[in-house]
Amino acid sequence: MSKINYDKISELYDSVRSGDPEVIAYILENKLLGHESKVLEIGCGSGNNTVLMAAATEAEVHGLDQSRGMLGKAEKKSERIHFIQGDAVTLEGIKDESFDAVYMVDVIHHIGDIATMFRNIYRVLNKEGMVFVFTDTHEKIRDERLTCKYFPETIKVELERYQSTDRILEAMKECGFKNTKLEKLKCEERLDAGDYLIKVAETKGYSVFHLISDDAIERGIQRIREDLKKGPVAYMPNTPVFSGAK
Image (cartoon, rainbow, N blue to C red; front, side, top):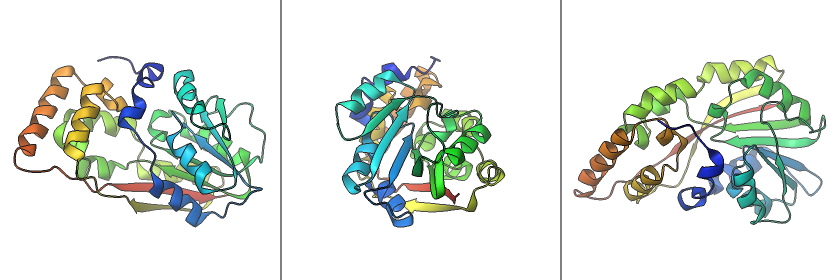
């Protein structure tokens, strides 16, 4: 099993990943952002969601990521967005009370020290600013994820990487966030989910495919192909989202 190299992944990232309009819509439904507002996406990757945010609001949008390769892709997509290479835990170099909203999408499971991360998110948020964390719960990993259905070897790996619901909410509350909650965001059904998942697995476009064996990946691809012989493999994703206010 290979170590995850995000600069390497960035070379093919956009071929298997896109932004989620439902994610941006949820943020804007729950936090009013105007032309004087500032928004930060932590772990912005190649900027897919950051670009959607910039298109949906007049707010000043920033994106932070550790990977220079990812940011190189992101910077080509928009001159309006302020992209920063930096650490998601320390948010070093970002001034206190700088942002009205901070969000991250499929990122927190890469963070070891979420307590320090949330303390720094709280630090950089303005009064009444909000944080939004889109991530899978243990329940979704075990019971709903299409990846885990076809690649069962990923279940143990993901349960070890992803924080529990209680741990996330506890860390948020310990840092001072109020009105913390977990909701499920329904996203658009993918009717081509089987073919899409084969492409992701073959290219190792999800980080978890770098953490299981090539044999396990091949077995999963064959399972999908067998099901595709019977008809389309569709998937209706439900995205859990944690939120809280300063």
